[in-house]
Image (cartoon, rainbow, N blue to C red; front, side):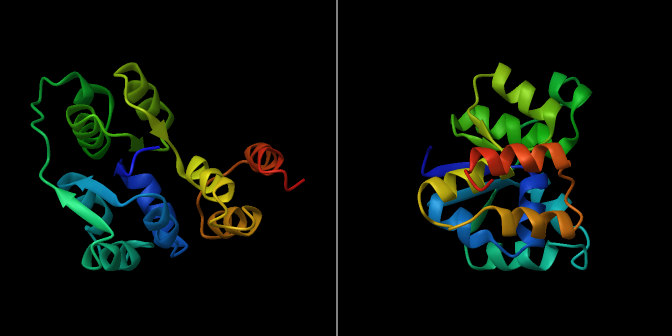
Amino acid sequence: MSKVIIADTGPLIAFGLINKFSILAKLFETIIIPQTVADECLADKTWPGAPTILQAVSNKIIQIHPDPSLVKSDDLLNILDKGEAAAIKLAHSLNIPLIIDEKLGRSVAKNLGIKVIGTVGILLLAKQRNLIKKIKPIIMLLKNEGYYLSDALIKEILTHAKEI
């Protein structure tokens, strides 16, 4: 995986909810988000995860990048929200991998030749590199904070991580 990565809103909120930006910081030298993603994450500073995201921006763990040019006729805007479209377009224009969880967004990014990884993929990578000992406590923390993970997906994650 690259030392620089673009992030979409969903994974930022996930890592913000559980205060685990340290994992991202250990895996990547630079985490870039487009302005629209920053606006989505920080529209209300009291939203879950927002204070942690703001702290990560202040600590320069996350860098805010100007939005790429998106016009109303842009196909990405027809099928994705503005944050996803901006993150995908920025990742594509800079040829940098993307952290994104939303299924349609992942599919669009892959079709554009962008390397993608999701929140769970980041956790698996962190375990593989011995940055975390176990995934299960983090997955359960995410679930307890309201981040949707089906029981089947949790079982698949824990099986892949060799924790069951």
